[in-house]
Image: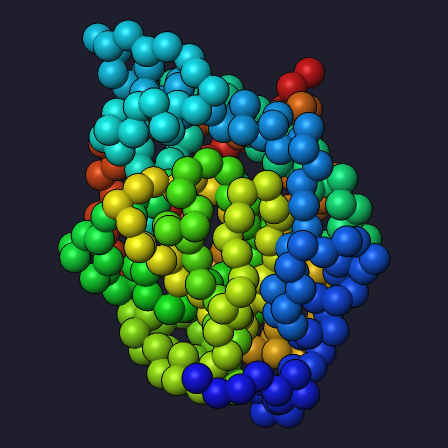
Length: 318
């Protein structure tokens, strides 16, 4: 791969602005990883344990309320104790989202509230215009699956989330929580150029795979538990499967107040899912994400579209 040139022009002479925006967002925070288009900070230990506890409870609620004829013991690591039961859950999408359903909606809102409290602790508020909801609780199975991995928009293909319909200015946030994040992780590649004609949704991520040829892989980047990882949408990424184990992580996106010209190169059908930081942080407190969809098999037709995997409503608490 080509050698990284920090002064390189990612898109027609514009995009040092993207690198500088990432620097401004993290400000004076102590970084655990520092690359031009990727930054990471450590989640405080007490907050991370709180996150693990509520995610663990969510997993427990999912398996206990779906496998009603089985008896489960709540342990510190449900993913490790009941991997087969978790893999058999009906609310897992082809790309690994563990969708909240009516039977587990309370536990899901607890996860959201904990994620919001962690994110707010980093004081990113002044840099944020809006945040995407709902957050994603994602499980990845490290065993290769030709049917899933060969899908047009499989996360195992090198891609940008813009190619799935996200805005060109949406900063990605990852929080690895449980499992084998070393062998079932994410690799990141910074392209030296990003043609304007592929700053749009793609029917198949393979259409943009040529960008990897002239990219710089962040080879020492780690998808490590206990970190909050931020990436620019021009940073390509893909799920890595080096071992048949499981990994669970949280991900979501936000739009920064600080704009660059190429943010306007693409609209998005998902903008309605971006809300203010205050409203986003209120889920699990003054408002609840709700759904009437029951905990049963994910039946949405696996077709390429630019919408979120499910629709939810909001209830305000008195």
